[in-house]
Image 1 (cartoon, rainbow, N blue to C red):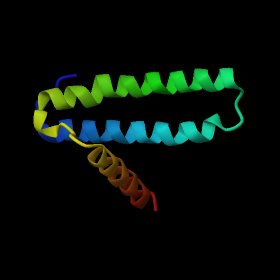
Image 2: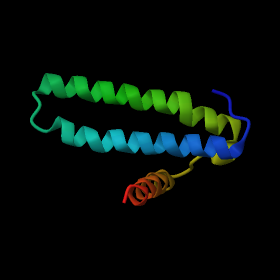
Image 3: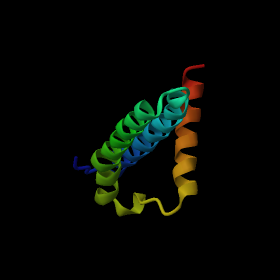
Image 4: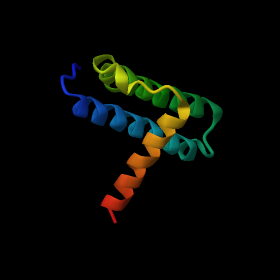
Length: 92
């Protein structure tokens, strides 16, 4: 993926962060009560998906526009929360 506009790159980066946060939240609930071997397989699958989102969406956006790089975990968390809040109010 190659981005030529910063607004598109920012939207892709933020959407990728949001998707990863959603997968992380879903994983906790999905692991409840699973046998160890199934839990391990699910963790690997979700981890692979998260990695793909980072490799194919988040990182290309940041490579195209280095000013979109995230320096601290708090910034990543703030983006995820803002996107979740936006979805919540849009669906209300």
